[in-house]
Length: 73
Length: 218
Image 1: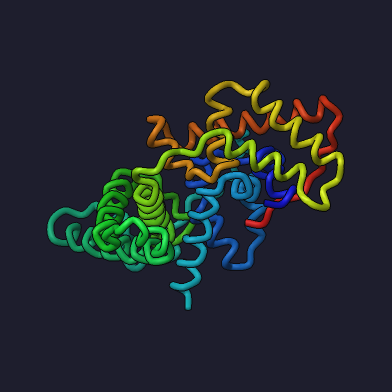
Image 2: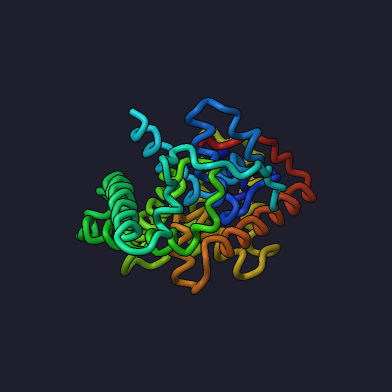
């Protein structure tokens, strides 16, 4: 494992950061903004940091993003 | 750690036909039943999508993928019907609904994949940190940093914070699996992890380590 990866895992993202509950609440809006090419990180502050810090929510994000993209094909 | 969320006025769902999903799902009789069946079919599709992505993970445990997809769709349907009032119309209804099915499916796969497996001990994390500080090409400061990190994990964190940080952040135990074993929730454990990370940053900074910035790729 790389130095930066271990430090990232142990020390996490810099604040501000959403909670897991807030992440789930905002996930659909965030994904649609992102897929539409809108500034999702500006519109949902703290989401990017949370997805960097929470592996489970990051997986949920990737799944929803990929499913939405697939539905749009 | 909470960030003030932006609020936007409630809008009608972007995929709303003549009568929207919420209305149809609340309807009595055959119309409501048809809407529920239609929603369940969408949730099942999403659950199969998620389980399909995780096929290798599940296959090793001999799981019945389609049975798991049905369970995930059923649980997501119950959750959604109980939260219809929470739908704010800020995304398509289907996108909002899919996230419930994906979450249910992912949690079920993670738990199934970890059935019968022990959560790794702290020793495994210490080996990771030692290797990170002593590998070829490492700077002398790295050995010092990773030794200090281990010291602060042992010294500065409370037992639950240490347990969660070591398991989830260093030993790759899925947070939902740990939550189930500890009788907790993802959100509560992530709060422990967040607090642990904040303490470690503070402790290492107080010892003069420059932690820098940098973000991981999602």
